[in-house]
Image (cartoon, rainbow, N blue to C red; front, side, top):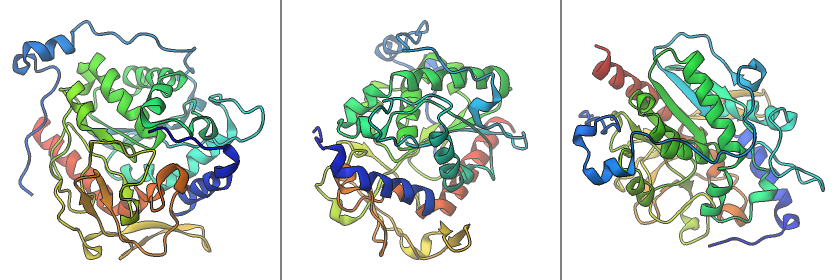
Length: 365
């Protein structure tokens, strides 16, 4: 369903969402099959993933990732595993002559991306070396009236070209053969989804080293997995080579349009790491990371968020009180899109550690 709306209606709501993102701050499962395991594939699957697969029809000239200024984060290497983090929408320009896709050096985008990184990307730092490229982004005012499918298609323009160029440079110059995690949120998760469905198919030699992918805040669907049979969704807390994803809502979003929730969405509970509707209470949440607006420092707060899978809608239902919801026109009346990371920060941090340790035990002992 396509949402039609006028810029004047949701201008203020968009900035509420931006402010919210910036300020709010165990039996082992088997490892998923790899595209390199051709002996396990059917003839049909092999045909869908030809060995000679190449990426084509990239749009525009890619940004130059040999220039360190085009990277938000190039870390000191202190861990055995890397993370490539792609930030969510940080380009919000409602001026009359605003570009639909910003330049790589757009300062507004870069400043917002850095602020959001503190609320999201830092969750991966305890267990991995986090690399974060800047990339050209869609202007939220240009794409807000697109459907989910149209939005994904639009993201395959200059954004895709930049992300692939960044990955090419990362694997050639920075990775040095280490295992890695793919991670993102919202627009960054759309890009992560595109990477999983195309770039990793073209590079099975990289994909076989993927510890996990965390495209949080956008839908991974049954249809998407059927179209890419080498991809597997997480089943528990410590399986590896899998996709880990969820979208957070209040119960009042049931039956409502949400730009990031597609029919057939798959999800996992970010507290108990179960796929069923077992409720994970407030007491099981290890801590939410919230910005103290008075001190300007992030704090770990307990008792803010619970989590329960809505198996029909494919989302996480949270009963948190006194929260600021995302813009209703885009995400429904009770979307907690801006809290996908911070509400479950400590559980996610621990889960990254768990999956990294499981991968290293399976592959490097």
